Length: 154
Image 1 (cartoon, rainbow, N blue to C red):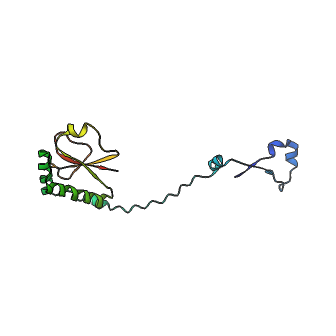
Image 2: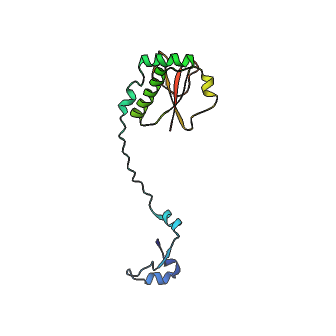
Image 3: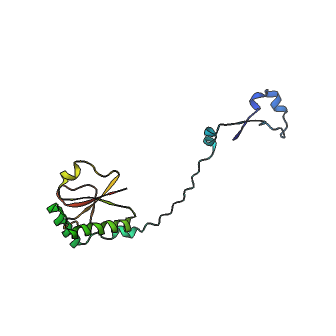
């Protein structure tokens, strides 16, 4: 990159007065190394943002009451039958379809201590309440008094 260096500071005051307007006061040129040259370029701020996410999906319930009841029984018994496993698989499919993220089933529990002992999700978790009064509600953390299903999400 060529950066002009003013020659005015090399000239005496009297010489500058005698310069005609056609005189090039920037005849000296030098090149910056590549790693410094980009520091003198304007920063590119044009960012293309296309948001085609369907935000109405956030308003739809992710679980039906019957599904919550079935998962609640599994959480309390600490063992899952075939129907409960299928419900979890269906819930994972809905999460992929609606929220465009790939969940990994982590736990189905009514005991906060078991879930908080060791953080198992590398990045984020998605916690969904399965209690009768909060069926399908998203939680920020495992509730000590409630039951929930937890998924790890990227």
